[in-house]
Length: 219
Image 1 (cartoon, helix red, strand yellow):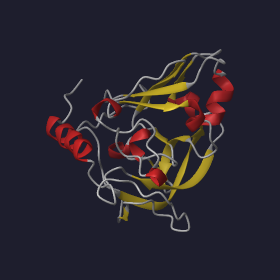
Image 2 (tube, rainbow, N blue to C red):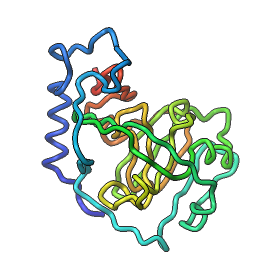
Image 3 (tube, rainbow, N blue to C red):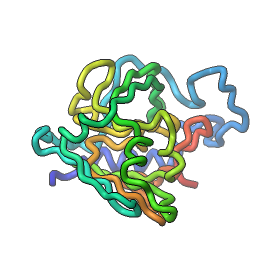
């Protein structure tokens, strides 16, 4: 496994300590005017900036697998062919990065997370989901955040295969959370009874990551 970009990680940890990007001198506003699609503290950007830990794993499709495990009735491991045999889902959503930029109307196609759940059947004890990636990254979410119609395992963006630098062949999209909650290069999905903070969550970032609450950092 290659080493993470230590300078980048240290810089983003410093952002969390300084509460960088929060409005009203670090105090999130109390009122959210949702007529504006842009969450507080965000700005529109052109294109799709690349942010990661400095590692772009290249996974041959013949070698790619996705393991679903933990508190489920039917654990599974999908090959790329298995993934392609799942019913495709299309979705259009906005994308909000914790570093304050956003893009609108991203066209995704992939496998619905609800479809995955229908196959592996999470046990009643399952309350959280941990995503692990081919670059060693991890991120956590409550199960209820994943059990949503717009959450998917995306393999295309704007009608083209998902580029490697953006998490291809498959990444997770969770539009109602800041984008770091959507793991690139996803390798394993673990359903769990107890929460386990991921890479950025143990480095000062919010456990919930709600853009409309400007919930960027742990307090």
